[in-house]
Length: 509
Image (cartoon, rainbow, N blue to C red; front, top):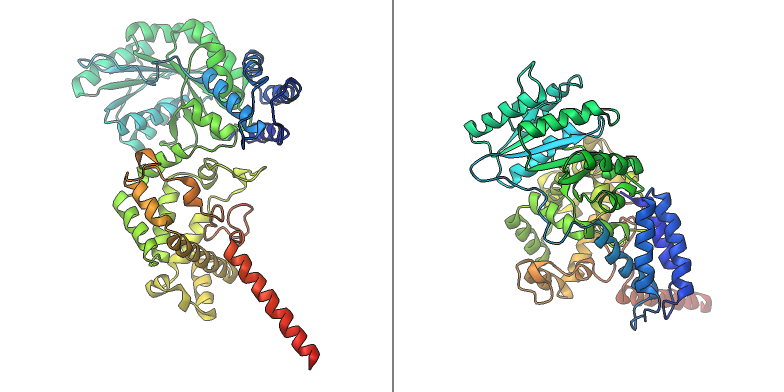
């Protein structure tokens, strides 16, 4: 997501490394390159102009704090200004305005044809269900063939009823759906309206009739993030015709540029409320400007990653596994359980894209989402005893496991090596007392990690991010051994001295 913009900005800021003060020449040179990067990313020219003017004003003459690089100072300024431009007005943080408790809340979904409006309507229903709401989907798109059937299929998948009366006009459908929701105890009515290939009077008139029949509490404009400037232009046109509550950007996971995400709030005045980040019905996230900007600037988005994990990870089971790690009893069964939890959180590339410090040029699309499934197949082809004690797996057992899982013996060997490496790193972390501090922070006992959030630097350990078993050979993802620590370097030197001693001894003979 937004990989090309991230790479360009990282390259620009890295050139300031070593500068002791953000001089005017430093800032102007960097901002000129930032300007080019943003325009190439299809960010609206007004956003680029205003953003860079604000950054320049704050950056010039900024003294660099001791032990903080000039590039980091500029990134911080750039981060704060970009977040400010993309964020909604102060006090306007709630993505949905709900109606009175005595009647159902009405949400009107508008957008052009092909923007993913119908799918997004179903995704929003899932989001509402997670918050204990009882939505009703209304199939009011009678223009596009199969639109009604598509919404019915989606409603069946997410267990949400769909309202439609053949032959009724959209405004009549909306009014009947509102009464149906009131009668059946449904507290949110989601109206999926028709789109067009372009903005025209017929489209706007139909939306206005629906809005007059059932005044919406919230009106969303749904647009494709990958269309860049076109998305911003169409959002502006809808904003003039309808009182938009916000924008939902779809297909943000496939957008490498980021023009729409960075521009729509500043240009239209309508804040981005949600973003679509995948094809599954649960792949709709509430938009947080600071998190997106963090990812653009290579800082990652650990908060969203933790939120994803909280939805699929059983807290008691996670605590058990942590204790098993502390007691050096972590097995391949435990690792299999972790793999299955990870697969529920989304694609591998999406998850890794949330982590800070990914290698420059890393492309999440190069990851094979079947990788976790292949690793799972290898582990499931082992016996219970082999999963508990992988050291008993000899050559003949590896051959059997490879055949049973449809993989190669090398893949089985790589998995076992990586798992052994991970267990050794866990043992080292235990000796350093890191597990104890992590446990206290997960349970809220850590003074330096509010809310129980563990210190990521401690979780990474001295050797950086540990390699995950089954990922051997992937750049930056644990394809090799962990970085050498001071103790491993000492051991290597001792072995070298021993070899030299033996060599000299042989020469004397």
